[in-house]
Length: 120
Picture (tube, rainbow, N blue to C red):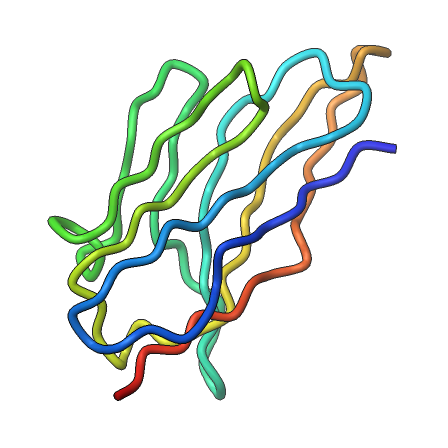
């Protein structure tokens, strides 16, 4: 069974940093584009950053200059390095990935989410 598992969330003070990880496991042939999304209480889920298989990146305006998305294909893992965190970054962060299984079937998966709380 192919799945995505996020980790790295937690409580951090304003101005602090966190690194989120999104690890894909299972019988995977290739991981295509991966996106990090977040959903704050009472708000819609929004795209924070994305990275293609060719490592092209895209960021929401709110993330530019503070967040960095990267990937380690050998580990089937995508990271979101977040710095200069603000209280408004508080949300559940989800990763979403397009993958091709070893059976060459295309899958689009979401992880279960990891909570980031920015508070003093």
